[in-house]
Length: 260
View 1 (cartoon, one colour):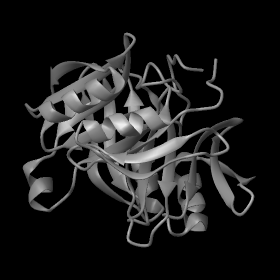
View 2 (tube, helix red, strand yellow):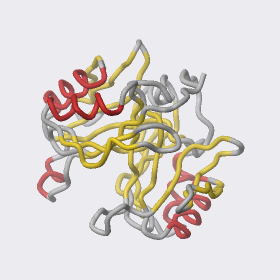
View 3 (cartoon, helix red, strand yellow):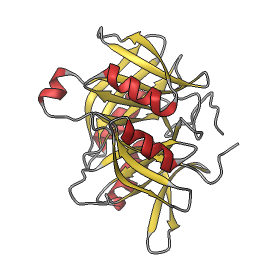
View 4 (cartoon, one colour):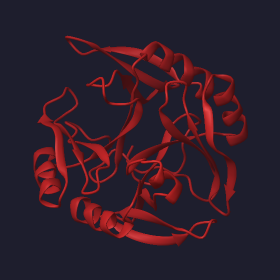
């Protein structure tokens, strides 16, 4: 369903981008998806911008910290998982072999969050909602649509996310290969596969919905971005992987059938 008012434990519920030039990034995504922005002061004094589509929150944007920039961390998209208890989930991450990059902390009137790296080096966030549940619009053009873990060891990935977030899994026949789906109860919430190239590090990859994947890829190029792969047909619909003007990688997908 495209409009959400809550998320079950273990479900990806929010996406954001950390980038070196927030103003330029906001303009890129506004031009590409029609997003509007609301700048808010974060607890550390920085600015965190919330993107909306059709009046619903769809994503966030923050500036790359100086520490991350000095370490050579590139602009990137991040995925956050809804959890019932952030501290308990963070404890399970450590027990399963992951590590906490940001210990649990409160964001007043919004929720409690942490950021972790799994046992294969892929980073993601934990989000215990209070006033902010996450994306109000999903699975629609201009909104978050799919979370995909690129992991070199899919069996280890299934074990880790089962132990930490309680995710179930099932295999989907893709013809020449299989695709592992992550499940929360009866709901499919994401998937995992090996990175398409060895030099690509393990990471959570964000898919954003579009009405026309080919046209969006062309528009991204016009705006200073770059097409990395595609557009190409998939069983779910045409998709393309692109980099924005500052190098953050994400995919766009034009679903054959949008959820109602």
